[in-house]
Length: 431
Image (tube, rainbow, N blue to C red; front, side, top):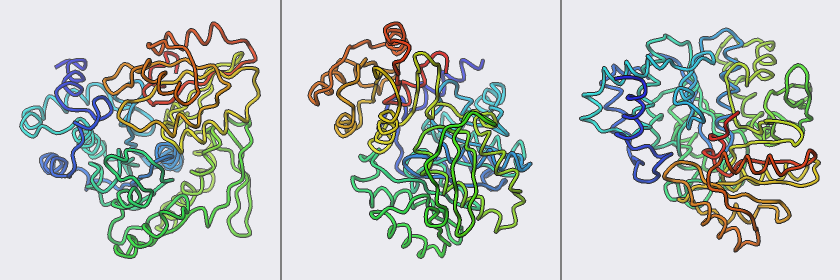
């Protein structure tokens, strides 16, 4: 099989949740356990850090991986979904898995895959674990796909678990209250394995404490240990933001290479995760923390987190897509300086988007579009739903054409925002 034939097999022969939605969701770990057993249980052949949460788990995973990489560890990183290329999901020291490795894996395992009929995600998790074992990584940072308890990645027994901020997303699978959603995320907590909670939330704190107690797992609420001030954008040493950090009586400044005010919610969990690893005698010098956090994008290739694509007019893309994520995005947009705000927005059809639409600023100029995936909400239908909320705009279905229209019509002092769905951001040509 060629690489393109391999991708076609993966995307078409195996159901992919990101593209088709609920029909690809598997509510148990049977297939993943069978696949891992067939592969020789590669998940047991490397140390790992397991990261769950609603918002911030991607940024946190990349940041921890960047620090470990800076500390000299051969570091695997598994995240989802990808933006541009399938190979973005699986990296070692920032280098994506090769097309040849993907092709060889599928070709050698195709008979078993055809019999097992795993989902796209189950197969991809198996591939990642196999690759990390083959390449003998020192450690792999593994991001949960959805939920935690029943997520395919939850066959790991990691060194450390991190759970980032909890919000409303995938409620049809995870529950319609924050405590129910937290219960699913808490499913990654393992017997005796330390767990870090990025943010203390009234609705979820007791859920995590009870699960940690049940599993005899030490638990640390990071925002009670690390106090992080609002970051100020800086251009040195890299494009990023400078935060003031306090831990008890100790205070210091830290440059973080990811823009987006919402990163202040992620930094406590990242810093406490590093602190926990140090307690377990991991060799992570402070210079590696400083270097890794300042250079997250360069070291790991992370994209789409408050990413400034151009100036005059300024154009910003962000993958925030659920209510809490979009709330942070809108808050930061409203703090920017511009003459007119342009919003190029697309969403998916299997989510309750009413609360997200309520957040949208009425005074912006809207262009409604749709990503080229089956799950995408029809752009005209999105415009109609937005209209019911008093938000009016133009319908240009193709993402590239919608962005082009905004570019051509925006003035130099305007601001163009692109988002609403990870898959809209993925179609930005010069991302």
